[in-house]
Length: 350
Image (cartoon, rainbow, N blue to C red):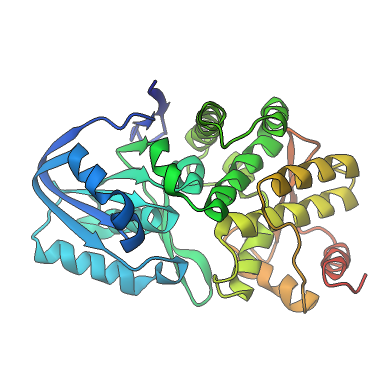
């Protein structure tokens, strides 16, 4: 059964998110499907049966977070210009979050903006990256520091693509599902504690609930001036971890899982979260094989890494912390000594 979730925002760029049963589509315009070799090898034949167009091109970029950069963007743009794409053309992001972020960014800058569609193939991109219009690339200073808020014209979430997903990739997506439950919905969190997301029925429900939550939040706050920032729970720590490890040791969702555990520890120190609830969250992450620990070699350097985060403004570090399960609090510039003490706890110095 196909579910439809309608996304509305203040710029009247509304669109629909379709979940399950990808329907055949024909476009009377030029279409470029942006993908990578892994997704192409597994699913390109399937998508080509579903999508027809006046002209259809495949643009393949290297797989991995390390390739989410300006060089890959230039490669995509070069292909579009070579094939004489114009403002009436369409891009389709067919892959995980890296492909979705880059395709959306290219769509936002090509001739000052053309349409694009998201067809995410990983659980993480289905529940998080494909919805909400965040696009961007990385550079030597950090993750997603170059980009734009640019909404797709539609999102198609087909759970059948997840059958070939490695277990680590699946767990990385679960981390983003848990993130939304912890901060917005205690009842959903309780469902996840009992559910088995390897069952199609449980998974489809969890995806739909996560997408509904994110769509509602983003429709209220597209550019992260208020409640949308809560979707970054765990990310303030995660982005530093990813930067330190060169985006090569952890998948994004794995880094977020560790980041949530660190954020929870800070929330416990600040009296926002009970230790027993921090342990419940940790247990749910461990249920899907997610990492929940990280050794910080230099707490002072780790702390300085917070200042490269996009959410840091005027040298004020912003932490999204759970307030119990199902609630949140945005904490700006907590006492430095408290944060350093927490980081030392993860370095073994405490």
